[in-house]
Amino acid sequence: MVDTTPSFIKEMPDALKQPVIKLEVKDLGVTYVGRDGTSIEAVRQAELAVLDKPGVGEIVVLLGPSGCGKSTVLKCIAGLIAPTRGEVWVGGVKVEGVGRDRGMVFQQYTSFGWLSVRDNVAYGLKLAGVPPRERKEQVDHYLNLVGLYEYGHLFPKSLSGGMKQRVAIARTLINKPKLLLMDEPFGALDPHTRWEMQTLILDISRQEDNTIVLVTHDVSEAVYVADTCYVLAPRPTRILHRVDVPFFAERNAALKAAPEFRAIEKQLLDMLYGSAQGTAG
Ligand SMILES: Nc1ncnc2c1ncn2[C@@H]1O[C@H](COP(=O)(O)OP(=O)(O)OP(=O)(O)O)[C@@H](O)[C@H]1O
Ligand SMILES: [Mg+2]
Image (cartoon, rainbow, N blue to C red; front, side):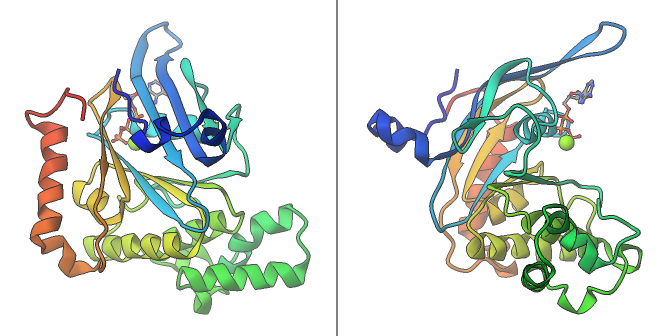
């Protein structure tokens, strides 16, 4: 079993450990059983711990090959499926189902087609009974954050793919989830829009105090956005490595061509597909 707990957590007194761990996945295993009784083991062993850094957003990436079980791990964190083995804890509370402390953004655009952009973003607050004036302030803030302030009156069908995904992000963020879970959120976008969206979530993580857990199979995306990257094995997946991505002062298009960026890409590629696969790091 690969122990992926950061060493500074292990060295803390027990009394201090609980409050600082925002997300803990313990000995997770998932086997799907079909109606005909056939079973598919998707997740063999996933174990990870993400610290709460008060006042600072953080991006954790789960990087793994296609079909390895990434979405399955994320759905367990979201509470959309129950694990076969193990547990997920968020902010010291065991996950037993979906909850407002976790928001999910999927690859497919999931905004409500019959509501305007503004009403899509306001939806969660309206359900929660937040008064109109406060709702408007919050909607203005989040439309600004995702660069859609001018487009609030439009309906999703008249937006580009990137804009639709901005609506989904704003609509989720406005509920102030502790964890923003993103499952290959930019997979359907063209390369330039994809890069713009990666830059947007970097901006968001610098402005909002929440933790983003982003699933991808794209190594370049992982290096560009991650503070911490977990490398997953092919199905049935397990966590092979935990990599702290160095702090890059400027994250922009030029960075992707820089030698220090390429070096980490190569390190992750070797872990995914190369000789390092199967060893603990
Ligand atoms: N509801 C389900 N019932 C049965 N098998 C499933 C179910 N969901 C996923 N699987 C299987 O579990 C394995 C892992 O699926 P999962 O969607 O978690 O992988 P993934 O890494 O997210 O894949 P992708 O890169 O294609 O998004 C696959 O073999 C898939 O066929
Ligand atoms: Mg998936």
